[in-house]
Image 1 (cartoon, protein in one colour):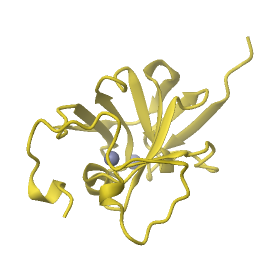
Image 2 (cartoon, rainbow, N blue to C red):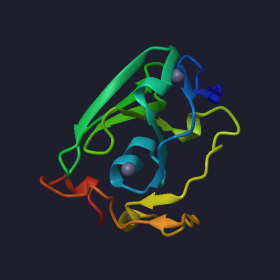
Image 3 (spheres, protein in one colour):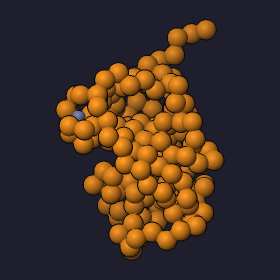
Image 4 (tube, rainbow, N blue to C red):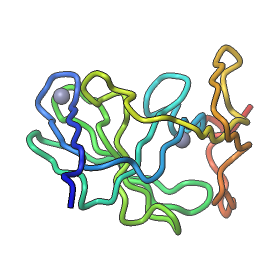
Length: 155
Ligand SMILES: [Zn+2]
Ligand SMILES: [Zn+2]
């Protein structure tokens, strides 16, 4: 069997380092409010690998856990020193057992895979124009079961 390609990345201060193996199974640009709050920017870029294809090489992580409107439990993992979110996990029908890498933390060339999917277009910033083939108003699993705070909702 051929060796799987590997990629490494880490946080801004360099304390947290990780390695991934193979191609991401799922990747998306996400314009949701949770990603905007997590990054402080207009969108997040996630590359999802099977948990077993992501290896933490170094660093001390803190976690932030929350439940989405659809009732999915999300755990974001960030460097204790510099606060960069390097990865997260979502407990849901399609994403359990996978780890999402915050793709901007990959070492250059950071965006080495094709992103062909944009989700949560409903909260996309007007100035963002991305040429993804597949665009979704929310996501494939969006099924609200709870109210979010106003700051987490689309305007
Ligand atoms: Zn750091
Ligand atoms: Zn999102």
